[in-house]
Image 1 (spheres, rainbow, N blue to C red):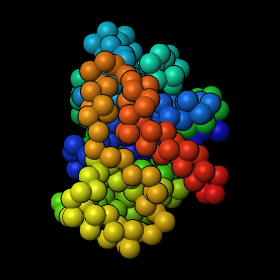
Image 2 (image 1 turned 30 degrees about the vertical axis):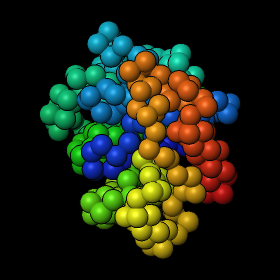
Image 3 (image 1 turned 180 degrees about the horizontal axis):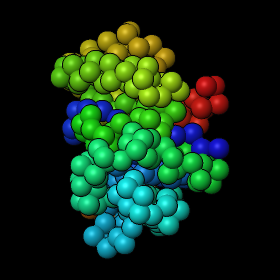
Length: 256
């Protein structure tokens, strides 16, 4: 039975998609069966997995509004070694259409139920906003992985996200919990980043992952080739860090 994790942060540009595709590739490299669900209308997780989002006949949009089942819409990422439930701009329309549907917050959860036994991990890449799409991700998930930069504004956004998760936990998904905070785009030469990192550890303790993802140009280049950084340049510091993060995730799941 798959463990389902949202990669979420209400702040944009913090590395959610980079974390989703590289964690997926890392887990796949360690013989885990992985599905990535792209819940962002920009479709970046799909593109970063080597999938032509413009050529899709079926996508997560069709799954959410009931025009397709998940199995029919899932495609294989050849470059990443995992499966993808892809997205494109059509998904933006789902926000409006979901409002009128029954159990609108649970559409994704119900759609994924038939494929849970096919995977060890399902990773959901959420959009950078608290929308119906994000709520669908949070309602479907067992836990939330929060990628964040060690900067002051990131701390402000984190408190908002923690409150959101508490509300979803109380009202919609009692299984939801924060799995961990992942420090990304980290530059140890910056005093402020080091201070914020220390504050995170002091406040959240073992909820902060041991792995730290450095700022790395090879991770930024990889999506333009339709590949996760883990497979684009295995020797890069970013790729090695995400491989280490995949190992840490597997260990953390065993102790949950």
